[in-house]
Amino acid sequence: MRTPATRGARRKAGMTLIELLAVIGIVSILTAMLLPAVLQSRAAARSMTCKNNLHQIGLAVHNFYDIHGYLPNQRPMWDIMPFMEMQDLKTELAKNVRSPAYGPTLFVCPSDPMASVERRRISYLINDGSQIEPRNGLKKGYQDFSLAEITDGLSNTAMFAERLVRDLDTPGNLPSAVYRRQPFRFNFLTTQTFPAGEEMAFLKFTLDPANRAVAELAGRYADDRLGYNATLAYDHLVPPNEWAFNNGNSIMGYEHGTYPATSFHPGGVHVLLADGSVNFTAETIDIRPWWALGSRNGGD
Image (tube, rainbow, N blue to C red; front, side, top):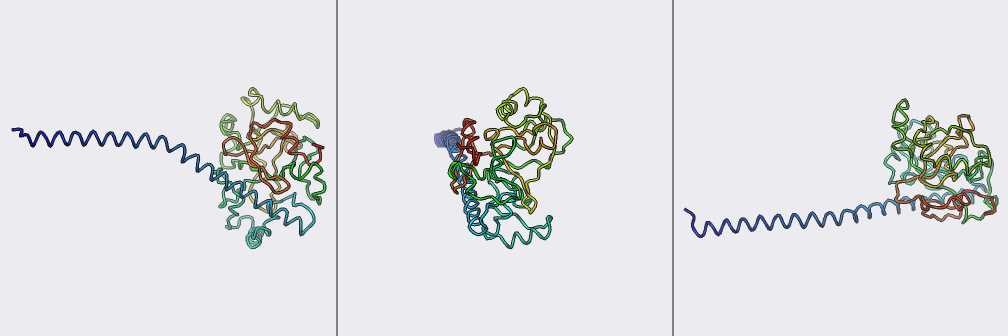
């Protein structure tokens, strides 16, 4: 027999359940509203860390220059380590390229999950220019390279930028469609060779969706681990966050292809200028100022 007390208790329990569902609903709505802000905050923190990394690299490059009188341009990340309090680590790594020593966190962008201190996969590369040939950036092989050669102005010339590391773990014998699903990790082949002076034609080829849809994997030449033999670079032939293409199938094709700056930061990449400042460059930048930023002596 139901008593008034029993009925009241059930009504109370029922109201409590309704209130609980209401609270859950409110929490769910607040979570949905706050999650994008949290993710945006984390992305901003990673971007700030990356910017600071490049700033420290810029200071080290200029300190290197003050001591030696030339820029480190063949293997810059390796050469500037003593100027970032990493001489002991450099000595350890030089003993054996398979050394268990970890790489510096300052050389790794936190937005790239494949960049790793454990495997010494680094995120920052030197600017190799905006021409097919001769390259007109800050990488000049083993030649001494003075700041005076940057006649376009230190604040108008890129020195380093970030680039997502290559995928060296995915097997290289898969269909090319597999690699096209994450194109920033790989290099692809062109169906023709673009000679010096044909930068605009090369650009149009690489940006053409029809060419990308059938692009074949170029091979696995590049290993972006930190080491005394690391000589990698990025270039300004195409805007940031675009596909990388070899220039034809010859040896020159690998050396004079497009290897753009890339990142997982929303909308662009960080670029270290030759004066030591760091700018965030939008991936929508017009190609003319991007080419100018990549040239050290183009009069622009």
